[in-house]
Length: 214
Image 1 (tube, rainbow, N blue to C red):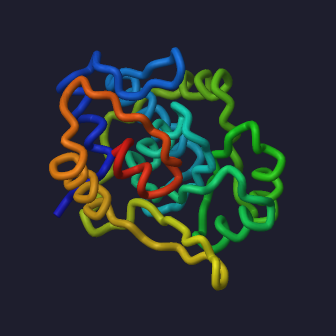
Image 2 (image 1 turned 135 degrees about the vertical axis):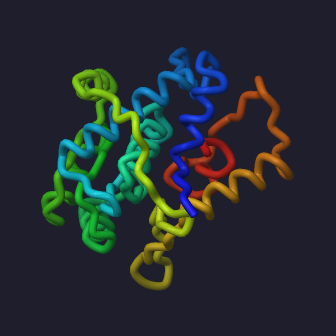
Image 3 (image 1 turned 90 degrees about the vertical axis):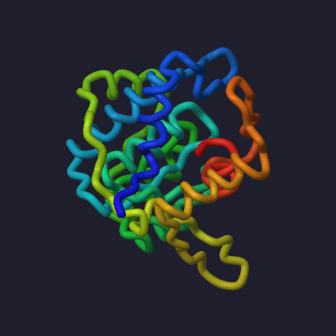
């Protein structure tokens, strides 16, 4: 059965395009803007050679660019590998090599460690700095179609803490994440239109993705 988690962004943009989707300080992204920029992100990734099923490291803090990157990877048919921005070069290289990532999206404030780890793993890095990243996306046409993925296809690979050994990648499917978010929305959070959810949890963790972003 077909399901792509990124379809939630498209559906939200169709229902309430002018509603605010994400806010950081005084900067806001509407659902229409998030939809457009994630579609441009999908184009950028495909231009860099991303194929369906390829892994992409997303090493970003809780910034507006995180959901743009996250849903852009999924729209292109890729698999998101969320990474803590405090990882060091050796750890970054391990995550990328172990997951088989083809690209790394890295926040500019942690660029040295990210580039070093990516170089060690032989992975291309796209540095994410708000102004230059916006210009980069602006040069891309939005990809209107969404990748045809199955509900049991892997959407995200989350790594364990590695307290008793090396971290291990746990595969979460499109259905896993969609259903977890639905349950959170319907039975736990009781979120209504117009409510604002504080995203204090890190978005590189499944809890932050499920209870705030997705």
